[in-house]
Image 1 (spheres, each protein chain N blue to C red):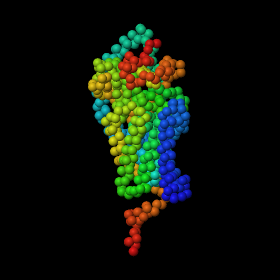
Image 2 (cartoon, chains in turn brown, orange):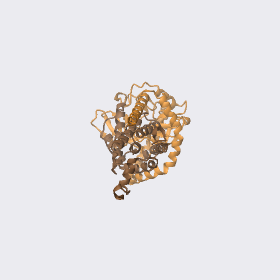
Image 3 (tube, rainbow over the protein chains, first blue to last red):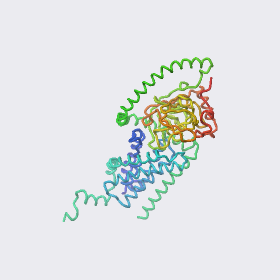
Image 4 (cartoon, rainbow over the protein chains, first blue to last red):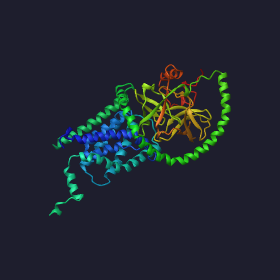
Length: 193
Length: 320
């Protein structure tokens, strides 16, 4: 993994940065304006989680912090809230990859759902800690649950998009190469014999 | 090698979390004119033209998605609106006669110099960004202080009150919508004149609560709620009277002060073009705005003692 800043390839970092900036602009300019089932879709926690899932915990956490800061700056929100939540999400998704390396087809769906839940619950906890005077109402819970469900439904297609954007710049991982050989039609050592 | 990687990974996490917490604490504690707020306003100034361009480029996509949603509701809305038009036509005829008498009486008692929405200069703005977070009901618009937009200026669209300006940079501004948890509006029920305070129902972006109405007041579903033209404390926005806010959807009789659910008239999900009601320097509206800004922040919108009309500290409705 050499050749780049802190051991990460520069093309990968450039792609993540471009994808993050583009997504934040599209998120605040278009996606936030189009409610689905009465809730606003938020793809930014999914992006952070998927970067962590593909690139590891360090890049996941850094991307989370950067995307969070950009969102807070662009929307004139309390600085640090989104950064804190997204840093944890990116790091967690990265650790999941490093410790378990999950390969199931539904992994992005579950990771996306967990990231959306962490983001919505994380915001809520921080806002309550900051003293927002809001009752824990049924409507609030409904909004949170619906938000998680909608984000989870969109996780799989969004994962394909993120993977398509980042895959060419990912360094060759021996574990991925081995898996490809066994699972996608490549010859195994046994069949060659 | 492995230890080094682990140490670096943990160091990065701790550094980023610490940085986030420092930012959060510093931002939360500092005054709106502080350094971090200034950086944020500077960033908004730089990003606004880009956001504006991106917004225009992506408008067809947004319109396409909006079209699907709008079509689903169009039929039911059409039937509802037809009934409403019939009712309003009948009311209009009756009210035109009352209006003539009212204007004559105003002139007779020299009360025809009141502040109204017409005393403000509307500046048209395009919405370029919207927060996806249920905790922040805010939008960013593409006009700012260079066009006369100031903090607390009311923001409306063709349907009714949208919110108020809470941050202003030279070429962009942040508008907190009426569903934002930090917004409270002195309002009254148009038919009966009873006043209270409209606050958001947090977690439900489609509903507002009109609170602190006198227990014996008469409110019916379908009544319109409009701005009262008063404020209940420092820090609030001085909305001109008579701007439509919403329509009463249901009434909660159980609370000690009558609480009324209000459905906003403005479609806050699909804001495209809005108008900021700016105050002309030296005008009566601007002078009153300054008086309101100088009020002590002690009494807040949520305080029942200052609500319900009698506690209002400043009024735009005073005679000339």
